[in-house]
Length: 495
Image (cartoon, rainbow, N blue to C red; front, side, top):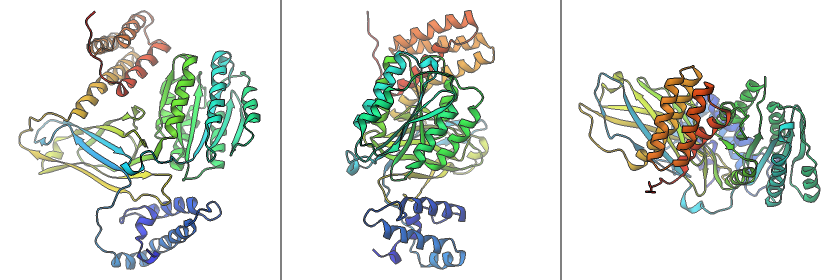
């Protein structure tokens, strides 16, 4: 098909109603990926010229109007992914009180690409080498980094940064040939100094940016066992910029003395996730699992761009899989995370529907567009308009929610109970917080999660004595209830 026959909007990966700013941004993203100085693949020079021609036409209002007049009616696009939507209720009711609606959204790779080669990696491991990392933690971390280096494919790029109160590039971002010499450099890392995460994160970003390519999976894995002081806001601002550049961040806290709220927020801003490593011997397992998951990515990120709907509030969003975690809802761009080749991405949304929204025959719950970044696809995928609506009836239908939503909410209830308990205890409401935890322990026990229930019960006793969560107990409960989303329900056994 010649460039004259190509849809310029599809070439740039934008909707026909895209603004001038969206056209400009899409052009720069596509041009960066396809520029002949950076890409020598067959056919990509021609694609680059098509991108230029599309931009020259669409960025000029007069030429755009003339071009739009020649377009046939818009048809439903063929998406490079599969998706489905489920609702907790088939209809909404005309009520004078707010009502709640849950929406389950799932994305997965199409069958024909599952098992195909994953995109090349551009990953930086940013590891804490402060004094507290001395001993088994550092030994396991170094041996795991060496194993990752040995497992690299020829097309992968790995860099390693070690930080304390300053950062050092141990392995620069490049294709690594002399791996024996690089392994020796990793072995020479010595613990010492304090913990300043921004120093390490900034150095890691510089390494990833050296080989930044939308045709690669660009990612940073941060590991630390301590709290950073005074530079948290710098880290969060940097994470926001990384999200705009398509660079993800995964954070892993080792032991009990790191700030889980900070690391969680840091990773979530890029669509990434945080993890709790309780014991040094678990470092290898969790770090290799994370690296293997990166090597299975089909779509680097799924962004849901939303437009406010009067009378409808998105109050909560949670990614169920592949990496369970909160999704920030105070932004128009909801970062839902990656799509793996063998694991779908599942998200559940909680909406509050106000009485003013149910006066018509139907309610628009969500009005937005899905934008998916797929590294192996030369051109960006066109945004998919996603408009979710529910009919309104005088009386609510007495239907049963789909099994997927019932299962998700049974797990989400447990996670949110520990969230509420934490908030109450932080406010000094110890009695209210411990009641939440006691209810959580009872629910965990009824679902067969005996070990986690005992952890919660012991933490209640500590809280009553110490008037606050212990550093370790709070993390065990938070990440323990989060891990339940990936576990099969347990059956109660009679002892």
